[in-house]
Image (cartoon, rainbow, N blue to C red; front, side, top):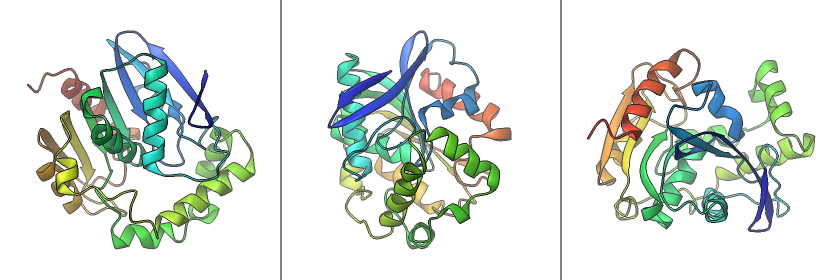
Length: 247
């Protein structure tokens, strides 16, 4: 399905029945990535999974990208779907988008899980971002990215250019403590303690600044420690949190 919002065609999928659960994929990912974790829609939830602008089947005619703009796009989608309250999961860049949503319109998000999303880009992440190219990925991962970004090689190259641009961007991912203090959602911050992009100390900054925050540091976890063998534990923990069982 697609909706016209903010000058783009935003592709999204909806799966399952129940309370709305927004899934926001990582940068260079796609909305369908939720299936790598959950397999099937979680019981009791209706998963809403957009492709962020310029990703997957979504367009981006401006050839510009920011996580703040992605948040406005998603809010536009939610308005079109007449959804004013939900729970959400955001992984990496999806987590950054979700942080913007939760500060731009706090009342929308009842509870959220933020995975591997920092309050700002540290020096070590910027060094990696400056080198973003196809050479950073193995053949299988590169083949997957080419399949998920359906608008051709130019789309993938545009995303890589955006990634390189993050290295010199300081106003998009810049969540201060007062800014994060605006968040009203129950929030679970998930970080791997071996994340090569974002040191685990950044997780504690989020945990300290977000009023109703919980922190889960995944031992020996890398960036986005919720896929593959880590998925079953993440599913159990995150869904219990989102269902309010921790309360």
